[in-house]
Length: 79
Image (cartoon, rainbow, N blue to C red; front, top):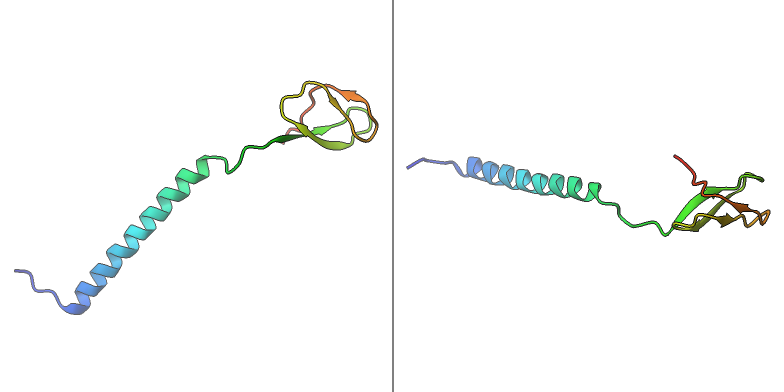
């Protein structure tokens, strides 16, 4: 049988435990990073006339600027 000192056994146990916790953390980090945390319910738009920035509901083709009250085409803010 393999003889193992108590200090060596403790270090092996702690090392394997740390590796297991690190592996679980890395797995969850990459899995949850791929998914969006929440789905946006509004989009950011820019008025064509007064250049005001405003938010509207999703998938509206024609939006109304709250500042100058003009109708705008689908002009989403591009990042």
